[in-house]
Length: 480
Image (tube, rainbow, N blue to C red):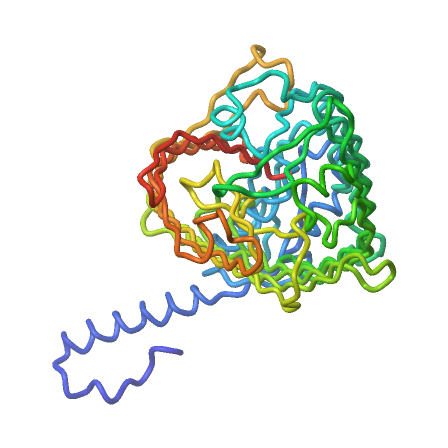
């Protein structure tokens, strides 16, 4: 019926007319087939020995009874595979069509997962310094600056992607920390809770910055700094890609009064030797990456709003907003680019205690080539740029050589990267003696990235900064 008539083609000869008619019919038919709607009649899950099926189904952007176009089928399956891998619960995930009824235009989808290992009782040998590079270079690999203990991570504790993490350590910085994340408490699986408590003591502490580095002080091997923190929060995840977090944070810190008086009366401001506060933290995140660790496609963006002190104790009064964005784009099958930017702006412009004066040099907020430095400030901005070339994408089957069944099949990838970072820190209060503040900084180099089991990344980077200082730096990350 579609291809009857076509009187407008009568100007062509009979042969030409037939050829054009056949071509148009094929195009129209292909287009109709391409837009064919398929009904999802069933979803089967296998391999989830501990993870509840509803947790897996929660990560899908389709459900039984939904329709999906045939044209988007492959893309949707791949996208949902990535959604499941991003949870960190699985080392491998496959989605296939198990049944296809062409008459009724119905399909059934089979999901197969290989669960990760969820219990990590790791003997703790932890460095007291900010990162491995500082310990190796600045502290001359001193074994006196290590902590020993036990880190127990119980991931997917009850099969609902809840996490319990306990850390107990002795040595240079005795510490106890407990964290529990319950991803949902309601039937729709959209509202969760998180709890954290931390207690630590230090025999050495950084009281000020000089030459863009932390200066540490101690007092006859006695405890000079005590820290207590309790964090209680709620998590709201209305859909697969948006997460809101709201936390109430209580902190109590104290430092040896004589050291503050001698070296930095502004450590807690006005010569105080203790600080107590209740604050509020809010975070919004939109996450549409193809994986949570070393992604090659998608967006990760949002903002953080942190209010330090809400007037209960009067020791802290800060307010800062930090929008951020990370963009990942594949240029070809083997090449991708990663771009990241973040801005921190303090809305309260009053003088901030040195202890609360965060800038670049901690966690993800650092520039490559500056790993040995801490650049404190009231505000900062940075951009990170990376081009990655995938050299290896393979799987190793360790068989019985690996005693842990979940790790016997190891997918791994190896990337060569070229990096360039630029940033600026505004320091109106403590800039004296720190030449890296209030000026543009830039650094970068070459990196080697190893992705193991889709949940561990080891990075080795050869980087240089604006002074021409070069170094080999090590970074590690996990997706949980």
